[in-house]
Amino acid sequence: MGELVPRQVGFRDVADALREQLAMERYPPGARLPSEASIARSFGCSRDTVRDAMDVLAMEGWVVRRRGRLAIVRPYQERVLIELPPDATVTVRPMTLPEAESYQCGQGVAMFEVRVGTQCQLYRGDLFALTTRQAKSLSP
Image (cartoon, rainbow, N blue to C red; front, side):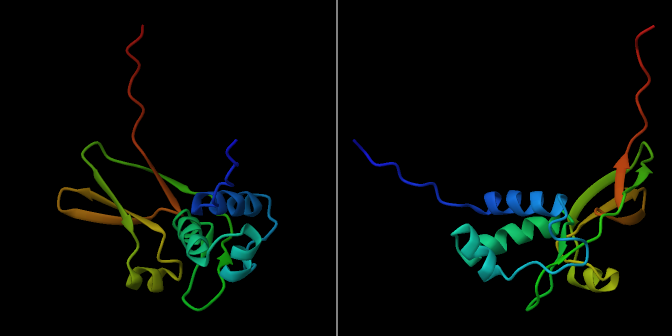
């Protein structure tokens, strides 16, 4: 009979586990997470795997990362709902380094570019949610 080969821990596994710990406030807002090496040891994976998981958490707005420093847990902020005009075009992209420095947040945060005609407005994906008007019901 063939032996069962243990499944290798992937970055999604690490991100899911850390996200759950963050949601349960094992690491409260403002706290520093353990080092990548420490997290890698606890999950039995490589630092590259942890780094990829931390990238995901930074993009989702859970943590702020700065090169050479431990990741910091971001405080939860309720998103402000922005209603889009009917002719708006939305593009989602990562925040640039100058934007991240200007907003004092992680570079992985998504930015919404909302264009209406020639005007463009930027919204941080961790602070704003975009919506359109509800379609009118066709039922009587």
